[in-house]
Length: 374
Image (tube, rainbow, N blue to C red; front, side, top):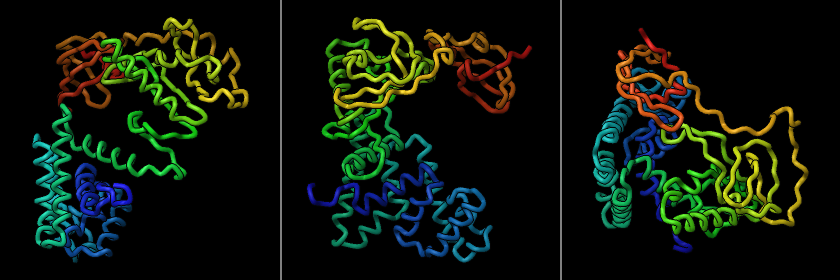
C-alpha cells in the first residue's frame, strides 16, 4: 500500500507481536513495557520503572521480578497486579513449550491476554483492528501450512524479515542483513557474502540434483554479486560445524567463475579448488570488485614464513571418537554417564549419552572431551 500504513506497523499487530516476543524471551524489557497495560491493568509508569530498576540491579529478568513482586518493598502496592500479569505470561510460556499448534497458541495469547476482547468491547470503532488481528492469525495459518516444522520463533523471524525489508531505508547509516531473495531489486555500495562454500551456496541438495537446479542457484549467486555498486567481500571458512557435524567445504564453484581481473586477493590460505576453470589456491577472505575501474590500495600481506605453504585441512583427531554403545564415560560438566549410541558424522561422531545426574545429551566427539571409565 503506497502511502498507507504498513500492516506490520499497525498498533494492534505490533502489540500482538510484542506479546509473542515477550513469551519467547521474558527478559525483553522493551516488549514488556509495550504490553503490560494492553489492555489496561492499572500498573503505573512508576511501578514499571521500579521493575526495570530491580531487574538491572539484581541481574534478573523482568518476568522473574514481577513473578516475585511481593518480595520487593518498592513493588508492594502493585504486587498483586504484577503477579497476575506474570502468572498469565507463565501460563502462555507453558503452552509455548507444549505441542500445541501455532494457530491455537496465538489464539490463546489473544484470549488469555484479554487483548482481542478489549477490541471487541470497544464496538464499531475498533472493528478494523479486530479484522487486522484475524488477518494476522491467517498469516500464522499460512506459515504453518508452508513449513514442515513450524515454530513460533521461525514465524517471528519470517514476520520480522518481511517487515524489515518493507521498511528498508537506503539513507540510514546502518548495516542491513537479509537473504539474497529479499535483496532483489536493491543495491548497496558494499556487499558482504559470507559462507560462499560448496555445500552452502550452492547447497548440498542442489549439487546432487538436476543440472537445472544448479542453474537456478547460479542465477541467485549472480543476483547476490550484482547487489553491489562498488565492491563485494566474499568469505568462507576452512571448516565449520553445521547440523551437528564438522565439514570441510571448498570455496563455492560460483566464485571460480568470476573473471580474474575483478579479483583482489587479500589473505593467503584456503583449500585448493579445481572446477574446470584452472587450479589455484584461493584466499580467505577475498574481496571481489564488481567494477574493474575501482582502484584499491595494495593489500597488506604477511611474510610467507608467518603462514607457510598452503596445506589441506587436517582430519579430526581420533581422541574421543572411539567409544561404543554401553561404554561408561565421564564429561567435565555433566559427570559420569553411559553411551547410548554413536553415529559417524563426516570426520566426527555424534554421541547420545545418558548421564547419571544430567539426563540424556547429544555431544560431538571432537568437542565433548569424554573420558572412558573403567
